[in-house]
Amino acid sequence: MTASVSLDFATLARLADGEPAWAEENALESATSLDRFLASVERRAFRIAQMAVRDRDDALDIVQGAMLRLARNYARRPSEEWKPLFYRILYNGIRDFQRRRTVRSRIFGLLPGQWADDEEGPADPFEQVAGNLPEPSRQLMADEAMQALEVAVRQLPERQQQAFALRCLEGMDVAETAEAMGCSEGSVKTHYFRALQTLRAKLGEVW
Amino acid sequence: MSGERWTENERRARELFDASVEGLDAETRSRLNRARQVAVAEVERAHRNPWRTWLPAAVAASVALLAVVLWRMPGNGVEPVARPAEPAPAAEVVEMLANGEGFDVAAEDPEFYTWLASQGLPANGAG
Image (spheres, chains in turn yellow, green):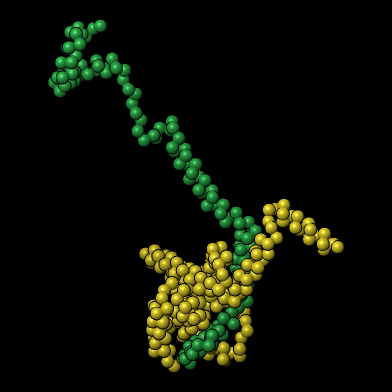
């Protein structure tokens, strides 16, 4: 009985606010779907951004910006479209960041006694907190191999980097990758093929 | 990897990447989680108050409309062309004669003056 009364009060309150019940249900459903989607991509997106910009905080900012833009502008779109949209937003964020960094480093480069962008700050103690780590020796080998892969990927042209990250690392199909990159499927295949060729040549032993 | 045929290199790269994702530190995971919650809250807010999405655009449109209305209102000194008041007929004739235009008109339209003379009007134009 109490539950029924409180439900009625809640309904009345919503009506007083001009908010119908279905609107709240839609909001909850949409928010839940988006939460599930973002949870499924956030860590991989963060690693992709980190590989591109080489900085944890910057990568976090870029991912957060992409999440917000997706939520604000595309939450009402069908959920099947979210993944390519999200990665397109993410890569736009990465590109914007890299442009800003280039301009900044040019300006700072003109000033004497300024530090370079790549200079590492003091180590963040939280970075040392381990997640689900395998045994140390295997972890070390994997870390080294991943580091070599990151360096090689970073040396690829931008479009090849994107094709490789989305196709190979994120596991998107050609159509999704094309949508995320804003190009044709043929272009994706070409970029991806060239990326693989270059990486094989550079990482023969590590791979 | 979605049933596609991947080479050994591609599988290896994917494994390395997956391992690096799994090995993310607690602070990074926590910050990602917080960022996600902020984004999701944004969706809930937008659904609950849909007018908030349109309000900035509506305000901008209203301001633009108001500006146009004020700009077009008479008396604000920006009307396209203001027509000068027509001079009184007598003053116009005096002005024409003062400028010597009356003679020009006579030269251009002799039939008018012939007709005028046939009306028997006094030569000085009085009456």
